Image 1 (spheres, rainbow, N blue to C red):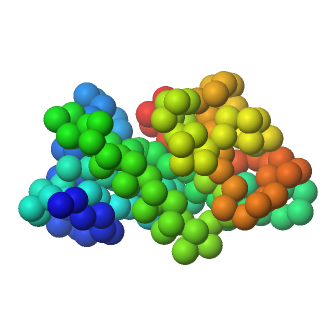
Image 2: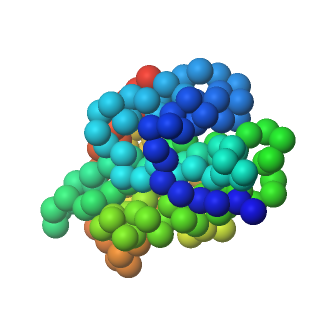
Length: 169
């Protein structure tokens, strides 16, 4: 049975390995370390079975400046599941729980740069993200947003994506 829980320092090496294997490159694993070091992590969750880390998701603080003030936003990245366990619901469970945790921690808007056919099932919308200016604004339907507070993005805004993301472009 898969368990979803907060990461602990004992998970860091396993999280690096999950991200390396899922993405086939080192820079995403390094991104996670930089986001932790920068103190911008809102939620970092792992999926485990029999004590083994099989998946990981991270949400980082991403303020959204609007005419009405600054919204408590977060960006989802990365989401990783070891290749041999992809497609069995581990990633979906991580996303669902991550959204709940972000809501519990006062986030009003979530964003993601990801597969345009995967994330809409959780409520992310490319159309909604068109109201948000960010370094990913030119990514088309891959840049998506979700309002955890209905109407939060009605007037649009500018997302301040953590600087660590510049390392993986």
